[in-house]
Length: 367
Image 1 (tube, rainbow, N blue to C red):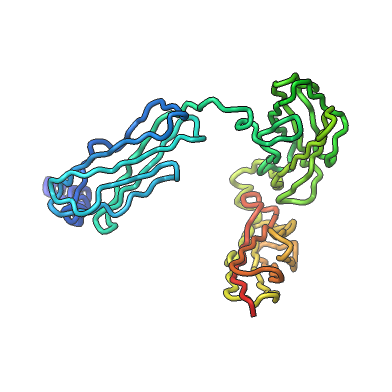
Image 2 (cartoon, rainbow, N blue to C red):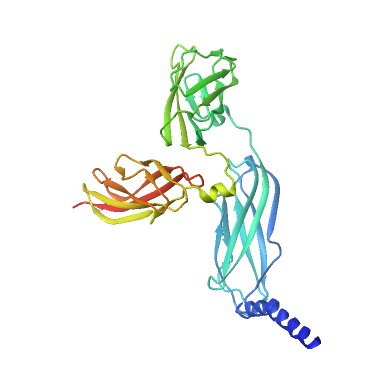
């Protein structure tokens, strides 16, 4: 019995520790020992500009090494590093500079140090919290609409379902030396309503516009853009135009695991197609294969292309389990040159993936 236990213990030791020994042997004798892997800048003031720090390291391996590359997580972080060969026992450094401009609040950014012939890497981190500098009214509300200013002229509801109305509030600054009163005359689609809070904004003060978007009853799924026009009591430039944007998806109530297992499932064979070289002014066609891999009937609501140059044609809307159909997609290259990439969205009653994407691309060349 003791012999069996010893064998089991030996096997356990090999399984646990052998990979570590193996990995060490593949290390090629290079090793970086940093004095720290995270630097906390603490609280910094945006108005004071960029801050910098240095990560020091030692090559405590047995072979020479070279820092090949330091990849920053974003453009706000600028890295620099020691060049050339670092011999065993020698020191090196990684420097980084963080620009807090227009980035108020906490931050946590990474730097990936790549060395040893691109075989090894290590991550370094910088953290901190940026206190925003005082901003002028022009900076805070950059878009001028007559006597009022706003942050954005696009009111983007992003992805919403057609289950129920949603609301969004935007800030409005009255830059005039008199009150700005809103007119009750509003031009917008029936599914968009507006409420002004307050209805009259004092001079040099902030008010809000509450926009309610009701997607119920809208048959068109996918991207939808509408114009919203409101008026103030100004003598000139009283008309204010906003763009209301939303991406509509069908609402599906929560389903049990058993219901999901039986639900229809839309599968696209090869959802990306590359036409390669296309002669300018010609139309090219590709057939995408759609299959219902679920256990209940699949209903394809619609297929929409990202531009008028692309036309999807659905051969069949209803698919029984296991059944397939085609979506014929035509790309018209009239007026297009160079690399082209268009998307086609397919909407169905697949509760897990009600919106699926197909992509066509190619390079349009003059004859």
